Image 1 (cartoon, one colour):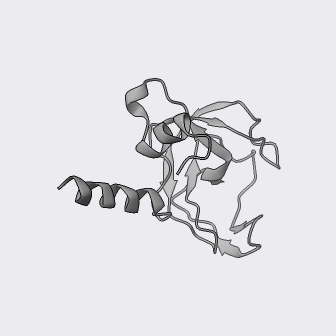
Image 2 (cartoon, rainbow, N blue to C red):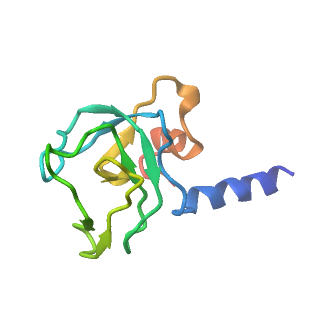
Length: 125
């Protein structure tokens, strides 16, 4: 039973099709946004999680940062893959790649297995 559970856990850690964050989670920007929506070190609460809409595998999140007044984005120009895609109307706020953020861990029990291992191992998994 233990080996089976370990195999499932390793499979989940390698699954890149799972969102990194959940709605209500506290996160911190690890780099500033290229258009100035936020700066490195700013703290946010995730307000929405959206599946990838372009060729990139990362999920997109909303963080209660509004569009600039009078600006409506009918499409999303991905900075990484260059794909132009229709902007999801249900987002209602600017979408940001999850790779721009890291979770804020307030209790050790909130760490995933992968995060806990990376704290004790210089190379992680």
